[in-house]
Amino acid sequence: MLQLKNVNKSYLEGNIKHAVLNSLDLHVSNGEIIILFGKSGSGKSTLLNVISGIDIPNSGSVLIDGTDITKLSEKERTLVRRNKVGFIFQFFNLIPTLTVRENLLLPLELTGTNNTEERINSILSEVGLANRANTYPDKLSGGEQQRIAIARALIHNPDIILADEPTGNLDYETGRQIVDLLDRVVKQKGKTMIMVTHSKDVIGLADKIYSLKDGKLSEMKKESVFE
Image (cartoon, rainbow, N blue to C red; front, side):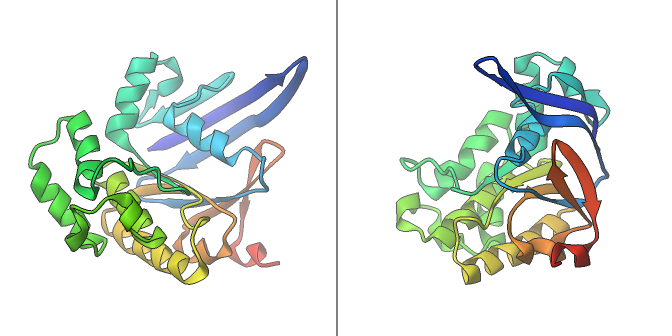
């Protein structure tokens, strides 16, 4: 499904080179849920951007379904991302001038999906917000906005879900509800998910857990996360 081979990514600040990803390797099978821990600034979000093709590594390969997206044009990477990847963000990133229904309709229109109303109604029911289709995001609670963000990430049926601190902007109880929702809908649909987080409450979701430090990934045992 997803493989990173010897991926390196660095940035220049003036004349100083900052290495973010350092000869990084990762293999993710279909349906696996991967949790990534790491300190702020360790490169977790950069890694998600490289996986999705938003950013390109300085060297190395990123393969999705056997296709090395680092060899594709920007337009081709956009199409891969549009069809195969769904994003869940810490701050929801819903378009405030669009209703819930319109926020969900947008990715369907971009992918040319049919039966849009059926898909919208179905996914809203799955996230428990069937009665909020015509509501604007500013009228929703934080937890409701994140439920809609999850619905938007899943509605075009992508193979890979990338979640960047999906509970980081929520209180503890609401965060637990979002974790439970992700556990149910992501696993039910057999999606591959990579989540970066600081929260130990998501451990139960994981098939594998990694720590990102000094640009490299190290696999962790669940019990070691709490040490």
